[in-house]
Image 1: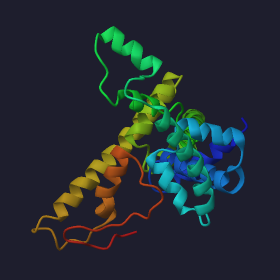
Image 2: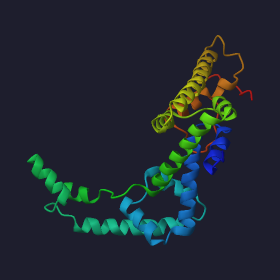
Image 3: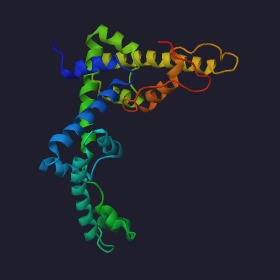
Image 4: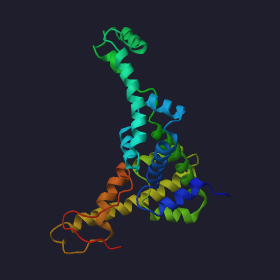
Length: 252
């Protein structure tokens, strides 16, 4: 069976720390924003989508600042969006609610608060364009992961040895799984991964007890950080550190 680019991407991501889907999603966002700032700033279709979304979400807006030389592209994009918002505010009045808000008010038998009309006009009409790109990539990579879990024992072994999926992407993978065998394989492997993490957290806690503080810290040294990633997702591509009470050097 032929392998896709998503298959190869997931295989590679599993050899690195953290949830592979988080890592690939972050890489997708970076590629999209790099391309936007260097090649698509003046594309009319792209600019229209950004205007409808009224810019980018917090995470992706600030991610643009990582791109060297991004200032001009960011300025052009935000000049466009803010100019549109200035016009929107200029046309908003207390006594002129949007059609949607007017219907809501009539059905509720209520008079709209003074600022509701303006607030309604400021509602985005589209999703953050970078989030759209990331969502599509996540679906492709989750599907690739599920497919490889089903058909490749070497991949299953690699997955079990990895940090596995974060809680959010585990739920997403389970919802996208179309075959019971894939669900069973994923649950079995993920449970093994989290059981290993729970044991390492227990050992980390034990070695921070004054009675055992003299014992050198091993792989459990950064378990507390990996537990955050497991429950809440990766924090970009920042290097993981190991520190805290009774600090030890991690044994590789």
